[in-house]
Amino acid sequence: MGLSEAGVTTLERASAVLHISAIQSEFSLWSRHLEVDILAACKRSGI
Image 1 (cartoon, one colour):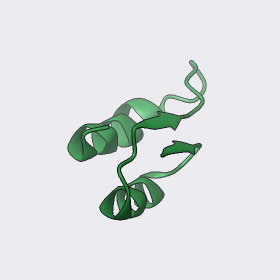
Image 2 (spheres, helix red, strand yellow):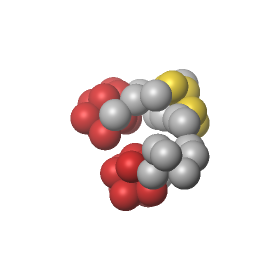
Image 3 (cartoon, rainbow, N blue to C red):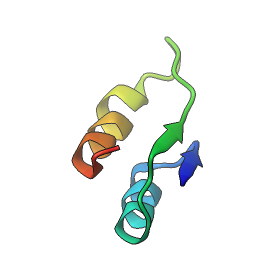
Image 4 (cartoon, rainbow, N blue to C red):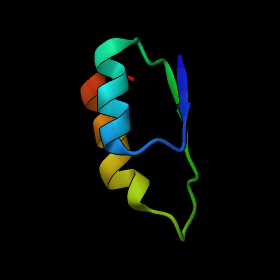
C-alpha cells in the first residue's frame, strides 16, 4: 500500500493497520516540512 500527500497522523494510523511501502509527497525548497515531520514518521514506521 502507498499513500500520497499524507500527514503524520494519517501515516501513523494507516501503518498501524496496513504495511505501507511507499509515500509520495511534494519535496521542494518551499515545502521543507517533509524533512522534519514526514521522514521521521516514515523512519519510525519502517517505510
